[in-house]
Image (cartoon, rainbow, N blue to C red):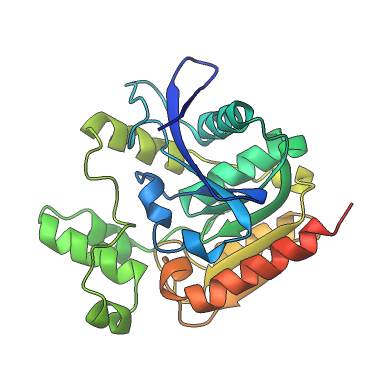
Length: 262
């Protein structure tokens, strides 16, 4: 598996696949590239590039502060290692936060931007309610896992898809890396940077997402000039997987349209 070296010396594992315009796929908090396993084949005309965030998968796992800015620099290191000047970027959940920082800090590297089930962070974002927080903070691992599953997927999906589920976190992450990922996501704040995002942007969110309330999609779309908003009725946090028959064509059509722009 190839590795890129980030500016601070951390080695970042990445997984390129296919041919065509490069499309970087960014996973959620405390997840590795397997987050995209069930969806990646929906982009056959793109050279998809996934990566293992620092602290996950085959990447280094330093016990040092992590941030969405730092994760964005790791993505740049991967692009540099591949010799890719500009790429389409599709980030979901924390990956959407990383994508915001990437597009704002490195506009020359992002051809188009898709932000899924994410938020701008900081004091302007809409936080999940206390009941959701309590369900994820319990001491019973089985109950906590089930609470997360119900936030990710609808009951109908869970009844017919017994797993395994690629969105529940990297099971081999060391405890320090999990804590560092949580802090990085919680400290994200791109509010002031979003108006400077110049890449064509699509914002996608499930209407029934309680893990990251859909109100955040409106905030992001209003904040980024010219951004387009698409809501998927009935979808929860993992809309891109459960509702892939709707979501992936939306993203593909947007990418095709963005590719025609100068």
